[in-house]
Image (cartoon, rainbow, N blue to C red; front, side):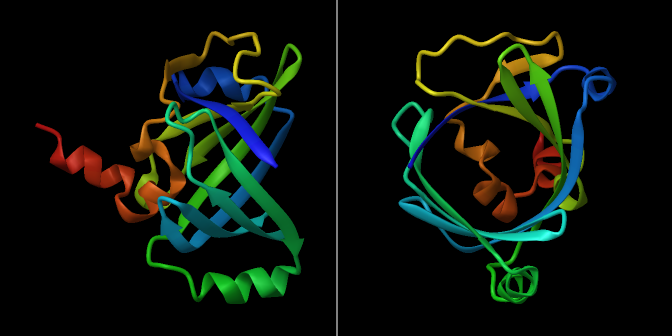
Length: 161
């Protein structure tokens, strides 16, 4: 299956929370984080998932994605085998027009990072932009979760001039 999504930073943290329809805690790790393929283990709420993603297109808008729900205890065991750098975040689902935006509020070593994603049916599909949507970061690899697992956002703060 082809995944088409766009990613954005969030302008005002409190504003989007007024529109939330669902909030879920997510913990995820990577069994493989190579650019050509990532193999991710995720616990989302009380469910486990195994996901394989291919290399992103040159503009970062689309890539192959395969995901399967697995038993929670298997996801917990697989997380123990993951590369160092587990990602922890809260995901908020917000309906905006015809689309659902998933806003991730990172915790742990990525605390302070807020990003929104919207999945689309085509690369040129139009969508409503809420007021809290900031700079688009689609295709910027440093905002990929697999990158954040190795180079956490808090380290970016330390290395800034």
